[in-house]
Image (tube, rainbow over all chains, first blue to last red; front, side, top):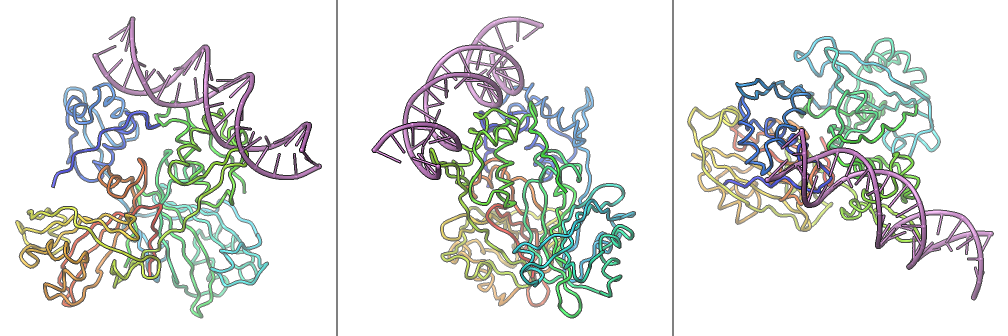
Length: 243
Length: 243
DNA sequence: GTTGATTTGTCCGTATGTATA
DNA sequence: GTATACATACGGACAAATCAA
């Protein structure tokens, strides 16, 4: 089964050179070009545009670090593998990327105590009007930002958790300080969307980038909810592995 | 913690009206506008553009079915909930959306017998040079396309599986015809990317749409791999629920 | 019922960016 | 590099519909 490539779309609000850049990036991700890109004239014919337009696309991808052009030789692909982040009943960030990276750490970006909204009340099993501690955190591995999370903890039980997190850079350690020796993932819902402005900045992504979103509740050994979180992963850096 | 909205970017290869449309879609997804959109002049000021540019963005979103504009009254949000698709050891498509939809079915788009590539050989535990049946399928619920899948089955065992799938519209039924009474999910890897042209067409999405991608291996009760698949879900219609 | 404020819809003209030849 | 065509974005003006005082 071969399917003709849909033609690039004019007056779609996206410039042709950018559509072609996206296509080439996608094709590379799918392993379509093993190592070298076809010559510019071939690509121009393939996409039904002028060679100059293809050149604009390639130049943008070179800027991004996806391609490397060598005059007289050709245009070559710069490869990098994705991190596999495990999702399961006993997911810990610190254990998550075992063996794939070194030097992982969590950074506290912001915190506040607020009244829980309806979603948070239901997720954490709180009563109307209860307060929660909100943490905005960033996780890095080998100096590269990996994920950005918004977490809620019941304030009556984890009043000063931001302090413990800021010190240790780990949710697991911070919860231990409150006598929670262990915790379990009760539920995880995974979705994907375009990154918000804040996430673009923190995760050092370019506009239009995609984030994988996990929304989950962690419970202590007694089954009591301790944490309700939404974590956004840069989709071109991380994939989720369900085990 | 409040963060200023990043300004829309001129001459970035993406038209301002499209950037603004994406932003508004995002904000709606985050629940920022409860029911009504702010007036066009306010949005224009907020994004730092002319009112006409905002109007182009809104007009595109009306076309998509995200918004509804009423002269003299305002612009309103058209809401629709996402389908929760379960991922786990015993995921079945037919069981997956239980209670959320009626009238589910699978459609065979294409099939062929090919020599397995290296990835497929490893996933299915085949020997070098083995052949596999490839199925391209589309799943619909209530007449709406939900997902698009590419599946590989060992050809020596499931020689004519496309026929059974075309008849029943179900992988579970097709495998039963070959004496596989039950099967289990061995591994699932989840990622997200922009939809390819083929997926855009089949899933009836607009350019730039995101797909959630699950890559998985199913094994029979003896632990023998029977199916290696990649399924793409429209990310604005489906979320994955890990249980 | 009238008036005025608000909000979306339509038209004009002009400047700049994008893509082709 | 130059010329041409079209899409994008802006600015202003006014019409049409809605709503509340």
